[in-house]
Length: 129
Image (tube, rainbow, N blue to C red; front, side, top):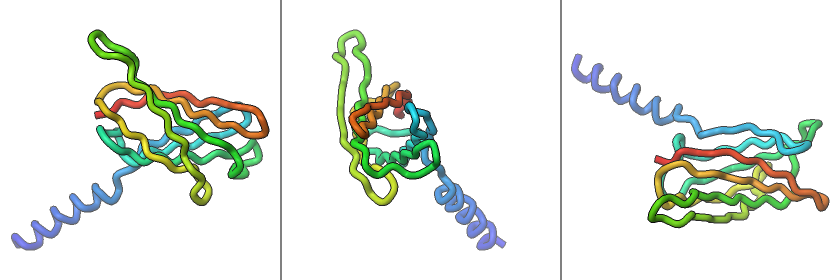
């Protein structure tokens, strides 16, 4: 009976890890629908992989854009603002990169999508733990 209970508990714990979901946002940037996935939910200190999928109004995946992610934590008393920039690269149908959060707290992310000479921006905040 003990073995069955232990195996059951291990299965339940393993299922929770397998079913853990990425942090996902879907935002509109001009004519584009932008799906942003951060591998950890909530994002944590250090490296966090990010995936950005861009679709046009017809639902077709955009693969010819330049994507830049600027992320920052505003200045606080005794601490200057922290600003970082990453340029995700196209991998399959998404742009992939790594965000490296140096401190816990609220971070602002700005994703700039440049295509055919026009730039659209998606803005959102994440709380890093």
